[in-house]
Image (cartoon, rainbow over all chains, first blue to last red; front, side):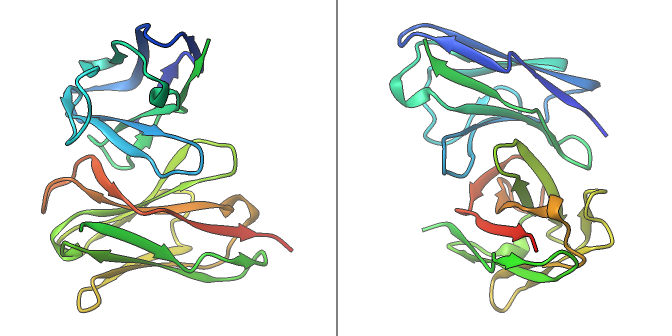
Length: 107
Length: 120
């Protein structure tokens, strides 16, 4: 099983600032990585797939990068609606595995 | 509109059984990989099971032998039969659709979730 480790657990950011979230995999794989956003009481929402491709309707301030074992989600200028929990997920191997999440909170 | 609607969540005693449903609209479930993901109270996301477009199924070790995922193509609905339920199965259960027909991938459509509580 591929273990996904996200850091930091919590990120305190002011609106308008840049946020950088990290996701590390215990085994290397190419680009079968997704990022999801989840707000309280809501289902997860797909932001990024293929490590770097934005899903339909996702604003350009969200970007993904990385391959191998190191992946990054960057939010270039945080808006009020971006404060949420973010999960990475690998879909390269079964079982699919998620990171434990990074909470982005208002500083 | 492309949509998934889960139902069937309830309070059940340890050792009991429950069947969750996931009704799809706007697309054909048999053309996609469909998954179940759960989230225990205050915790992160845990992948549970998948049914391939071809009909094969795969389960997380934590539910293998207890949960069974099936599909009714005529009803365009998924079913997750959960037996021998444990307190650690308490969670919100989401069904989700993989993005590309007939291929595994990221999940782009999610239901709203259904709550399963296992407690005496």
